[in-house]
Image 1 (tube, rainbow over the protein chains, first blue to last red):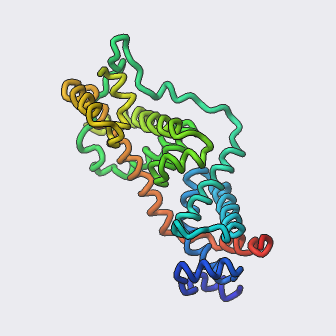
Image 2 (cartoon, rainbow over the protein chains, first blue to last red):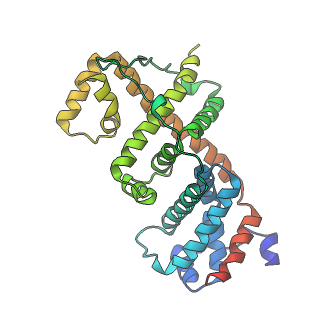
Image 3 (cartoon, each protein chain N blue to C red):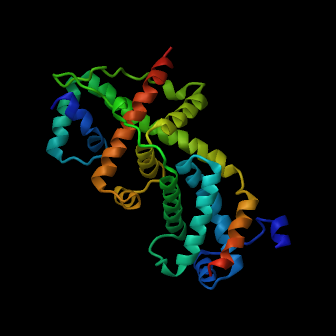
Length: 207
Length: 82
C-alpha cells in the first residue's frame, strides 16, 4: 500500500477481460485499476448531477461498492465503463432524491406564453450570429452553466442525463422511475427554459 | 399549424421524430413565420451552448487526477463487501 500511495498511477493498465476476471476473482490490484481507470471521469458525472463535492464523492463510493457487489451479474453486453456509468448515475440520483427537501419549483414562468390567436406574447428575437464566437466565450459558457443550475431540479436532471450523459429516453425513464413521455416533455421544457434564461444575455452580446 | 403547436412539437421536428407529412406542415409554417424561425434557431443554439458549456467544464475536471484520499477510501471499503 505504501508503494501505491507514493506512485498511484504506476500500475500497468489491464485489458478489459483480464480486468473483469480479476474483479470477479476478488483481486485487489484489479479493483484498484478499475477505480483509477474510471474514477476521475465518473466523479465529474456525479459532481454534475449533485452539484457539490461531498455528495459526489459519497455517490461515487456507493457506486463502486455497488458495482463490486454486482460484478458477477455484469453480462458483458455493454462495455464495463458504460455499465459502471449507469451505476454512478443511479447512485447520484438516489442521493439527489434523499436530499430533496423543497417542493419542486414550477417551470411555467420560463416557457413561452401565447396570445388568444396563438402567437407568442413576447415574440422571439433573432440571436446574433456571432454570440458564441466572441472573445468572451468563456464568460458565456460560465453563464450557461449557472443558468442550467437555475433550472428546477426535475428538468435539470433530465437535461443532464439526455444531453450530456447521452442516455437514451428509455434508460433515462428507467433510472428516474418515470415514463418515456414524461422524459421527452421534461427535456423539451428544460431546453425551452434554458433558452429563456439565456435570451437576454445572448441578445445583449450583439453590441 | 400555429405558433403554439410549432413550439410544442419543435423538439420532435428538430430531432427527426415526425412522419414526413407532419414535417411538411412544420416546414410550411416555418417558411412564413419569422418568430418561429428565430425561436427554432435560438433553441438549436441553446442545445449547442449547453453541451459546449459542460464539455468545457469536463475538460478542466479531467485534467485533475482523482483525489487520492477518495481512491483510498473506495479501496479500503472493498473487503467489507466481498
